[in-house]
Length: 408
Ligand code: AMP
Image (cartoon, rainbow, N blue to C red; front, side, top):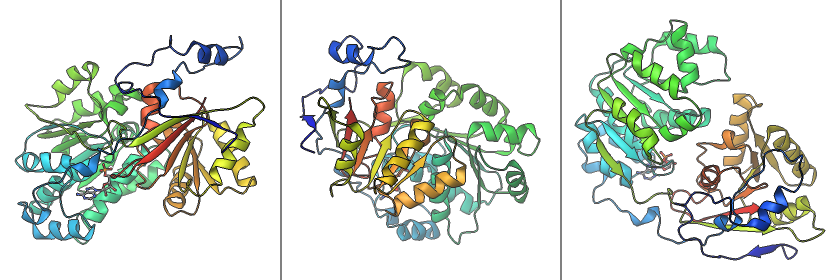
């Protein structure tokens, strides 16, 4: 890595809360907007992308209670134990009782905080008392998050006679229809596919008692607002509402007020939401350096164990992945042109450590939760700071520290 200039830890303490300032870093802007034919380029100030990790993250929180002492069924305690969970995470600690009491919830927490358990445990507990089909509808923005929620549900309900179905775009809808007809206690899905099933008169939203909206901010970001409103409008027997968002701003407020009724609001201080446990740095290429060579040399060092590498377009992801494999760096890819199966296989191979690098586009990587990602590398500067924060949040999870590097 000697040929690379790493600008070290220039403090940008408050950078997370400030909007990216397109006027800063004039040299950077000039360099990247030099060509009149250049299409979209990022105006992000590279100084925002440098930050030392501070070790004050999730592990700070230790709940005073153990799952064993919660007022939940022994069968559920057993499956929680089987997953290796002994104490609730902060979001779980602060929400489970209120949810068991039937309160609506506004939870400000990110993926990585244990929020899935926070909403699934109370839902499973209620289902154990009354096994009603189509009891809870869990709406999420991405296919990957849907699969993760379903995996967590399955592992928490092993042997309990409770079933889930997952409906996401990019899969065969006829298979979904067959699944739907079998009936499930919990249905997880992305808004588009759920609406599609409802429009075909296969899914009836009015049967659900409980609504969970997960990663609500991202759902709005991705343009699902009308679908979400439409679905909620059809949930005429909705009694219990849980909404989780990584961020909370005024643009969401009106809609949230329409969805939730007298909610308990819980904002967690721990977890990965601030990126504090992620060391962030930039890589400035020196004159004459080949970008791919710099990347390859980095990836060949031992430290880079499990890497998510971001590229801007599907085509560029494919190309970069191919180049890496040819250079002997085991890589796989996820992007919108890949089938759901192909994406899941790539993700599984990455989780198991069979490939070192997962090359991804922004959208494909949303919601990915792999606990031991050592590095996130941005091969290009992301278009927005929000996108940057979301990308780097793929590392530094579950109380670990991670590194985020951006080529500028
Ligand atoms: P989530 O934020 O729901 O995506 O969860 C992040 C990770 O934390 C997942 O791998 C969960 O299985 C794990 N997790 C959830 N609850 C607990 C807990 N109480 N103790 C330890 N790990 C947990």
